[in-house]
Image 1 (tube, rainbow, N blue to C red):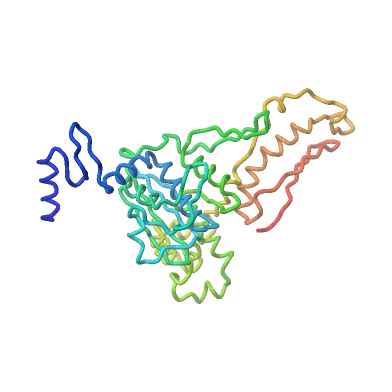
Image 2: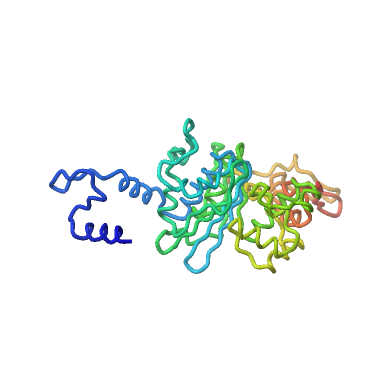
Length: 360
C-alpha cells in the first residue's frame, strides 16, 4: 500500500509520469513505456460488449474447441458473459497469468480471419482491461475451460437491441447479405458461420446453456460414468453437469462453471422443463433474392389437384421454410432432429405438410 501511495503522489506531482513514459523529448513528445502502450492498445481493442464476445470466441476456437457454449445475461447495468468450451484448457498455474499481456499458447501459430490477427497474446489482456471482472471459473489442461466476463454497460457500451436475430438475404449475385443490429446474437452467429468447419456455437441464457451442457454431457457419458462419478472435476468442463444427481449438486457444479442458477431452475432443467438449445446456426434462414420471389407465374409447371388448385413451387418452398422454425422448437423439446426439410404436397381436398421424424 505505501508503494501505491508513493506512485500516486509522483504521478500527481509530475507533469510527465515516469511510470508511463520511457523518454521525454520535450515539446510534448514522449516515448511511452511498454506497459502504458499495451494498456492503451487494450483499451482500444475492446470498445463494446460485442468485441468481448468475438475475442472470447476466437480464443476458444484457437484452443481447438469443437463446442462452445455462451451464456449471456444482464442485471441492471451489469452484463455477464459465461463461456464454456471443450478446448485445450488452461492449467491452474496459468489461470491468472493468461490475462497478462503477450501471454499466449500459440508460439508458432497466428490465426488470421475476417476480424484480423489472433495469437498475439493480447485478447484476454484486452478483455480484462475493459471488464469489471475477467476470470477463469474452471479449467485444467486437456479438459476445456469456463470463463466469466462481467462489464459495466455504462462504461463499456453494447447494442441497445439484444433480442433481434440477424436476417440473411441472398443477393442477385449469389452472395449473402446480413441485416440486423450488430448485437451479441449477430456477432456469435457470424462467427459460427465463419468457423462452421472448426466448431459449433450455442448461445442462450444461463439456464438454457446449463440445460444444453447437461444434455451434451448425458449424450456423451455412459449411465455408469454418471452414476458412479466420485469427482465431477475429473470430467471435462462441458461434461461436469452430467454428473449432477439432484438440483443441489447441479447448482453447485453450475456455479463452479460460472453459471448462477437457483435450485428451482436446476430442478426444472433436470425435469426437462427447460429444453437444451440447438447450434445457433440452426436458426439461420437465407431468404431468396427479391427478384426471384416476384418472378412471373408459370402455370404449366404448377402442381395441381383435380379442382385445379395451383401452388407455385417457390411459394410452397417459402411456406415450408416458414414452418421449419416452429417445428425446430417442438423437436428440441422431444429430442428430435430439429433441422429437417418439410414436404408440402397438394391433394384433392387438402394441402399436406409432413416432417420427417429423426431421433437425436
